[in-house]
Length: 151
Image (cartoon, rainbow, N blue to C red):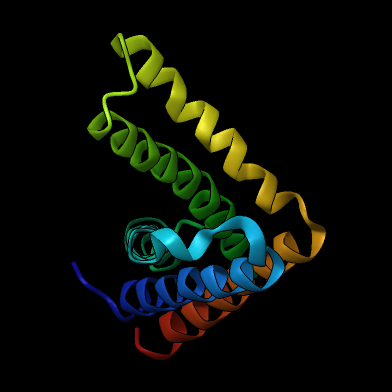
């Protein structure tokens, strides 16, 4: 059942995904992230919307879940980061498949995780990780307020 908490969580985490793309562009200008701009923005915002709807919004509207907006926002930010890394690894693997770079399927599957670990180095900067956690906390607090306001 759609609730205001789910809608607010999906919109705020999708916006946080878009903001994180801009943050990565600022902190890593020579990483050539603008080459795959449409795919990156789509993946980050899509993962944010899905995690917001199915995880953060669902947990916030659940009366049994007693965690606050800050805790659930941090959990949502970490969940978005992990799923985004795996999705970007899958996307890079699909690009390589189109170029016929693989000889067997096990190399393709292993390359998903190699690409995810390679992309994880961008999150190892404490400023980038801090901005991501801050955006997750903001999404959690806004979702909590929406859940309380429109029950």
